[in-house]
Image 1 (cartoon, rainbow, N blue to C red):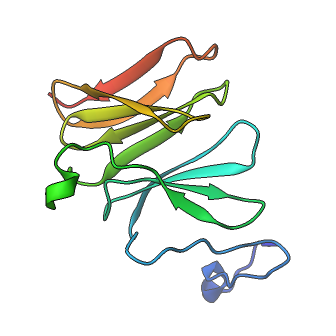
Image 2 (image 1 turned 90 degrees about the horizontal axis):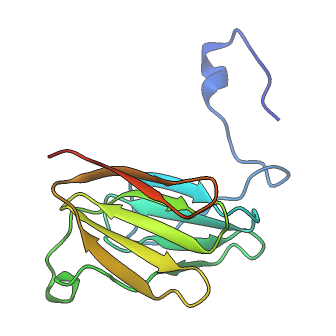
Length: 140
């Protein structure tokens, strides 16, 4: 539990097993975006250091990287990392945005994806409350 303090060092918080679990996977660094699934069990995490977001299972602490959806990832070229991850309110989809003007929408049951190209670097995205529409912010 964090409480207000006049101590300047009080802003430094150490993990206590009663309230925190540290999620870490070697090679995935510099978190760029986090999004809880509507059911509260899964945490999607995007990283500047990888083009593959990780889905963390809060019940087990296990993290699973999603299949690479960037076509040139297999030849070692980066899409600039993940800019944003967002679950749909229904929990059925996850959108992943990349700085190179790509975004992918994953089906949360099968983890298959559809890839789309934007007119510029994708900065953010969000679903409508009914999960039928997706708004994407692009720097053109």
